[in-house]
Length: 106
Image (tube, rainbow, N blue to C red; front, side, top):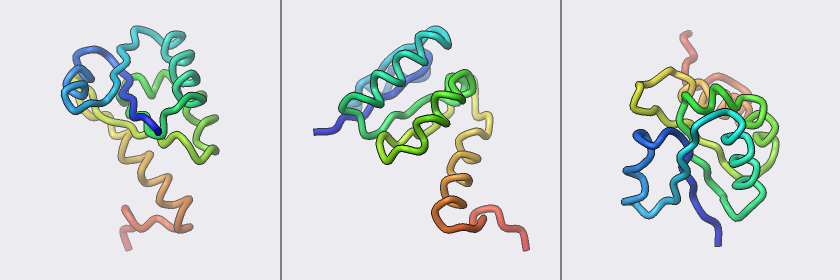
């Protein structure tokens, strides 16, 4: 059975444990890079990751995005929304349908 993980700073992710998700507090880029690979090649189908941490792990996330699992979903942290999450959704939609249907300003 697949699992769901949440990665990021402790203050941003601790509430997800109350929902039954597995939380992983990450302090730096090296720790995050090792952890995301461990989770991705483990039993995790979905990995939520804070936008702040995702900005440090862009190479690892890009590498994993070509695989069907896990789905890596960016979420805002306590420091606020950087916009990376919505851009990630936009990029995924463009790849799936071949056109920008979210922000098309025609």
